Length: 309
Image (cartoon, rainbow, N blue to C red; front, side):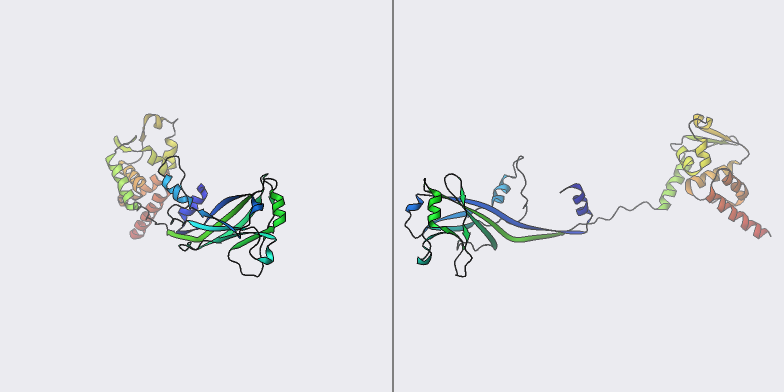
């Protein structure tokens, strides 16, 4: 099974597999001195053995290949009786030689269907055609026949008849179904947890790699977060800038508390201390291209104006 089919199977919620198990068996029977036969019939048998049993026993070997029927019940051994009627089976057809195959009466352990085909060869490996019996007379088994004189001529001069019987046995179809067990995906961190972790990162300054100097005081930050949240900081931290090379920037004309609130918003998406510095934070939000903070500050400033009026 190729990768695409494997992916389709794994993506399916349920699946079924049906297997029609069949065996092909070839039996060869050699009759020497055929033209001298005077008996009513000759008989032999062909025993069909399920080779998957032997394959299963060999699976412990590293060089063996697994059976396609792994995990399925073993198939029964089946025996077929083969008969050669050199001069027909009654007076009216004594000018014909009949080839017969029938199911042995001991084959009662499992349901199966069998198909047969005879092939007749001489010692030169030359085949002569036979005819399948399709008459209305009730006969036990499968029959093919050929004119006796044609057959005797065909097997000369060695007088050896080589009869090959091809047997195909089909057993009941087996279907097994299964259902893929879907495990629940791992629970994703809640947004509030992410926000809390980033707040702790900001407050602790752990692994900080950039410094903002405001009114002679320092605030620690992380380049990646500043760049991701503000296009102004992203441009400031390009490798060729002085700020990027020195890992610090001095901010003038802005209060320390405003910058602290600005950074808190960058890390957490909230600004709880907006009130006293709403106008200054609004200006800082515009300066550093933070539209979410700008909208929030505008709403606070608007409410204060309404209350004041």
